[in-house]
Image (cartoon, rainbow, N blue to C red; front, side):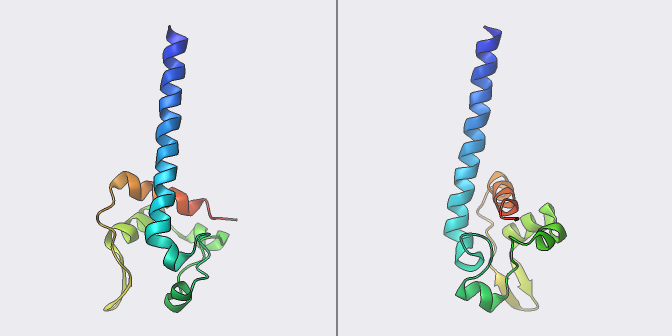
Length: 108
């Protein structure tokens, strides 16, 4: 009985992690890929115009902090009065964390 419960709990955790990963990809594709690209390299027309960071670069990933990435997603990014990235305040904290983890996976 104890073993069965452990297996059920493990499968539940795997399901939640998989759902977060799938949700993060959907959110990335819907909200981020236009500028940052499907692969995170930023090689899109809009990404090049805005000079977005290449999230596949180890140096870029090393310089980024998770809390700063989460803040940028939730609050957006401004340079002076220019909005470089709109805020995605409608995303839950879990969705933001999943997007940060998804972005980390682009590192080569």
